[in-house]
Amino acid sequence: MKISVIIPVYNAENYVTQAVESALQFDEVSEIILVEDKSPDHALEVCQDLEKKHERVKLFQHPDKENHGAGASRNLGIQKATGDFIAFLDADDYYLPNRFDAEKKLFEDQEVDAVYGALGVHYYSEKAKEQYEPLFGNRLTTVYKKHDPKEVFPGLLNMKGSFGLFSIDGLTVRRKRLLEKIQPVFKTHLRLHQDTEFLFRSSYYLNFHSGILDKAIAIRGVHESNRITQVDSNKAKPSITRVMLWREVNTWAESEPTLPENIKTHIKRMYRSWEIANSSPAKKWSMILKYLITDYKSIRSGLYNINFRKNLF
Image (tube, rainbow, N blue to C red):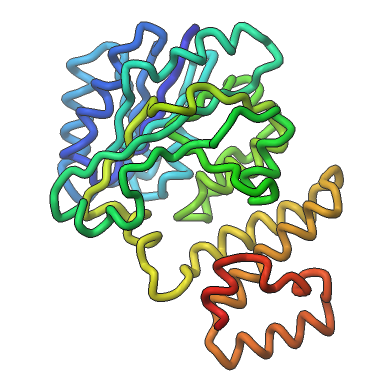
């Protein structure tokens, strides 16, 4: 089993060494691909030192050496990968010793395209804990029970009730199947939530199997400068980045002829609810009226999404 671990690196000089060392502990990891994305700190120098020190570490930058975001960096890493399997890791996160325990057995079955597991949390400072513990607590990010692969896609779309979540840090996927069935892999125009969009889309086309769900196989590192944490912890109003995410998912759904109509309708409702909730009070009601007249199906369950209800009233 040869696994390529892809780590996009941005503003992570204090954390990337730990991430790399956590992946080096596994004999199954044949290479660790660092894609340095024009960090404003000294992450490039740290990555260069890691490449010199460890034979399995390979460092790349974008051809123009500019900043392109995590999605483009992961895409570049996938292009450079030579392993039979791809695993992802954020530069401020790290793997635990059981990271690939389930994968070694499950991937013996050639029908298994991808395996996912649970993610834990670690606060790098008391300030980070104080700021973000209400968001993450000390809970696992996990799917609550084992599901058939056909249930993963609707589960992630919140169509299965209490399904749960998993993170890209806990995902391992066959490289050949990924490249054959998912193009583009990551949508580069989404600067945030491109990993969530990828999980939605890929779980429709690939067979996702559950690995270890009751204990962490990787750790999310939380610190004050987490970009995604800062966005998701803003409780004042729903984020425009969520609107962009669901707009992208809705665009894909409308163009996918094999997607059932009930799922397309669900996705459109999710998009409408975020779109309306992110609008000004006056615009909210004008949009509701517009969709009631022009697209009743997409708004009739306007109270369908907790984010919509919470921000509408």
